[in-house]
Each structure stands twice: as structure tokens, then as C-alpha cells.
Image (cartoon, rainbow, N blue to C red; front, side, top):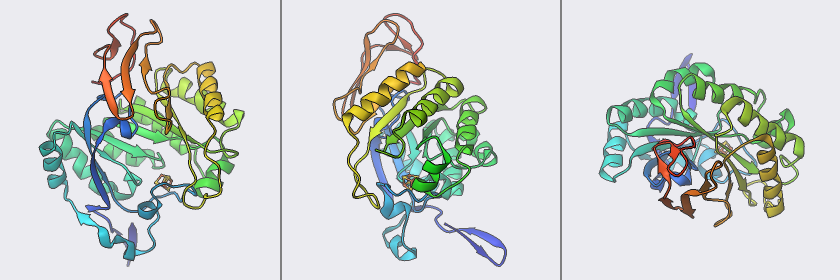
Length: 302
Ligand code: SF4
């Protein structure tokens, strides 16, 4: 998405949209961030990873500029206008990795904040602290994938090294820029479902982002270059859930398992505070960021 022409770096995909939709914020997934609201969601082309199981590989790993023929240009001003016209509370860059059309997301995020819209990055988290510091003042949510917890996993799955930078940047998003952070781990049988990695992820979330940080553990299905893998067994998700509980996490959600561990239950009084049925969301027990029944802090932004 960037090209060096005679020593000048050009961004090739500014405002080039591959996918656009009005989504429930829960679809990102962001469960503790303006629950029940709609978010104007935009994706472009390309990724700085090449995950073997990518669900969006047609747009994230496009095969030359030929694949871009379906692009639609939506300039930042038009995106913000459309988000407001469609009744969205915010805007998210998602579907592919937002940092590969960084300049566009930066311009759009600045404009969104001027228009009282929330902003969310749905990201693999692989960018520099310097890049984060440029866009940090204009982002409200950092929905980051943590795909595993060792070099081999990131090398085999995503073809990258130095994955630990993802941890550093996520901590910075929370501590320096006060973003709301939620973490997703797509559980892949025999790749990242061992006790060591799952414990490493859960403990890191607990110790560095806090026990109230939501962890979404999602079921994988055969995709792209991993068509021969099996779907993640439910028992594996249950095991990951127990590991997360043992590490002290208060909010662990299943993904891609409709009707299963989707509600938010207050850890202090045991009452349901947000009910979710697929992407239908009903807020029944929140007062601001807290449980309305017992007053416990639940780390919601509303
Ligand atoms: S980081 Fe996400 S979008 Fe990029 S290749 Fe991996 S799964 Fe696909």
C-alpha cells in the first residue's frame, strides 16, 4: 500500500474503500464500548500480516492492483457525513488492518472527533509507538488481536517477527492515550491453544491492561490457506475460558458461538447487566460504567 518512487514514499490506498457497512459495535467485537450503538465501518486493502487463516484475505492480501477494481473512493468528509446521516454514534476502521491506510484514518479520526463521533481501530496492533502517538489523541477504542504468545506462532501464522511490540503499543494505547481496550484471540487448534500461550495472554491482559479488560476468545473455522484445519472445539474454548478466569479476568466472551457466554454478568453481584442475542443488545443494568444494582465498576464506556 506504500510505494517508494525515486526516494519518495507514496501511499496508494488513501480513501480507497473495499468494504463499508453500518454495523453493531458488538460485531467488532467491542462489548464494553457504547453497547447497542451502530458504527460506520470502513475497510481498505492490504495488511502488514499475511495470516494463513485470514477471513478477509480477498481484501487484506490482494493480488496486485487488479484486485482493487472494486474500490470506491470515500473521502474523510464524506465518511463522516454518511456516518451521521445513517445515525451512527461512531466510526471504525476494520475488515483489513487500519494502519496500512494510516494517513486516511488519521484525517478521518480528526474530523470524527470534531463531529462528536467516537473512533475505533480494529487492529492487529503491529505498529510503532510513534505511529500510535500521532493518531492516539483522536482514537477512543483499541480493539486489538493477540494471536498467540510466542515467536513461532507469529512467524508461522502471520509471517512476522518482533511481535512483542504489539503488547507495548496496546499498553500505551491504554495508559498514555486512555483508550478503551478489548482483546481478541482467535483460538486455532494446535497453534495457540496450549496452556502456556493462553496463560501468557490472559496474565498479560490482567497484569498490564487490568482485570476488567474484556477478552474475546473466538472459534476459528477453516479459511484461506488453512482449509484443512478443524473448527475450534467448544471444549478448547471452555479451557481457555477457565485459564482466563484463573488469571483473574472478569470479562471473557466467546465469539462465533451464538448464544454462548455473550451476556455481561456483574462479577460482584452476579446480575446480568447487558444481554446479547447475536448482535441484538439490551442494556439492563448499567449506570454509567458501573453496575446499577451494586455499584461495581465494570469498565464500560457509554
Ligand atoms: S491481521 Fe487480520 S486482516 Fe491482516 S492478514 Fe491477519 S487476519 Fe487478515
